[in-house]
Length: 169
Image 1 (tube, rainbow, N blue to C red):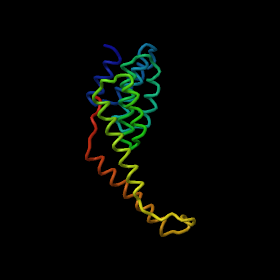
Image 2: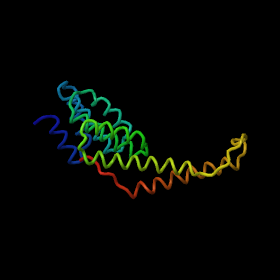
Image 3: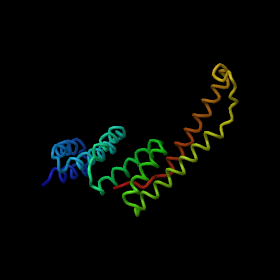
Image 4: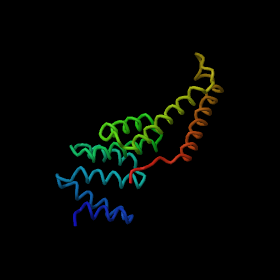
């Protein structure tokens, strides 16, 4: 059985350490290293290690495999969306759609990212705080400004928990 198959089996069973070990061994094989990196990125994503996942995905992109590059871009979009980085999510989904324009999930998630990006921008623009020359020196206005920013962030997080993006399985 191949290292990728064993790693996938361990991943599905929830044995992430064994899966990581198999995928790192797979990375040493030049023929399958990109797939090893991609699968490592998926495991790190599953563990909530988003930054590590994105870093590992960047190694997986160094291939001519179109299917793999689509999946890397798509999953980067999911990670950025979950982090609230909607502009980066939009860019990642657009890259995925350049590779596979018929992907329903990529189109759907691109629309979600664009809607969220507009909603957050509109919420931030609607904050009514007087900005004078002495804005920072005026503690009361500054604290009100910070309070309003935090309110927008909390409302955005509540909205995000209500909408679950379709994920790549």
